[in-house]
Length: 427
Image (tube, rainbow, N blue to C red):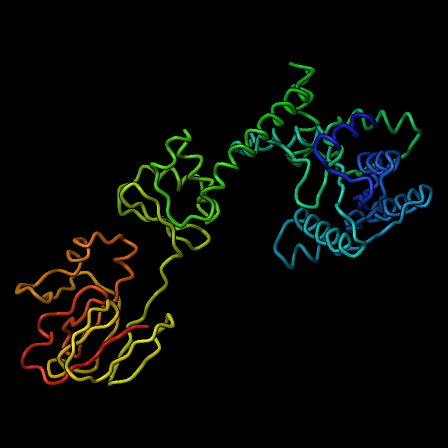
């Protein structure tokens, strides 16, 4: 088995002969085997044990066993005690999730403190196979079929190339004792049911089932790397033209890989790809997705904008930190989109800055008839996102005097009889 692990470490570039590594040691067969194997292969290791105080005297037995084992092997031993139940209650998570969060948080802090290059954990081939089957039962995409990866950041898994039976045989051959966690024999957890019930049934159909699933997972991991490389080109985009994706084959997959970064799920992606232009979807992370003429556009969900009253000339800070100014000027014309000149004699205070509403209309400068603002925005080919952000300025009589960035109203426009103007501007 030593040679199998050595080759696996080399093939996946997991460990360096000159570096220090932290070994997560529970006292069970897997972690004891991991510690022995790495030590025999010549790696410099420290052991770290977590006492979660969940199994009474059995938890203390495990800690004492690990301490004694490390003393016998000359391996530095680190331990931590946790009130796991209190943590779970305080953070509203399950006991299993609480133990995981506490364990890996401490491992990472300890890794940094002792200058270790990685945290070695004892997942083996059967764990990976169980993970694949568990994901299949729950429903998964391609990534869920890749099983447990050899490396996840600083977490390293040198034993993934060997089976549980090989681990037990290795320990038996060396006469090495280990402890057994009684909860591993219970069948009220789905993973344990897969281990104790489902896998034995599958082995009756095919004795090589575990090897076959592991080989499949490794091939799919390679395929996933290729797909990740492709999807990485689109990862940070805020807009995606679906035509760009056609040469890659699977539009849905690449779209999901892009949108999952913004909190969209697979169901929303499928709906968006079939939706009409103008459809909007909102993710759990607070992003909106717009379907817009063959494009998908993402932006933060629209925040409320409370109408802002402007009683007189001056500069005002709006809710979104924009500045709105009203200043009296000599007669002049502006062609800047965020600055408008209106006839001071034709406007009544207070002015109101608000978002565009259904039914808003104006007489665009240069025209004689009224026009719905929604039609004006459509003529400009504005997207739904742009339309819903559109600001307008309304005077004290309810007259829309300026569609910001688009048009002023002809009724308040500068004319030959204008003697003074108000300059309206955003910054």
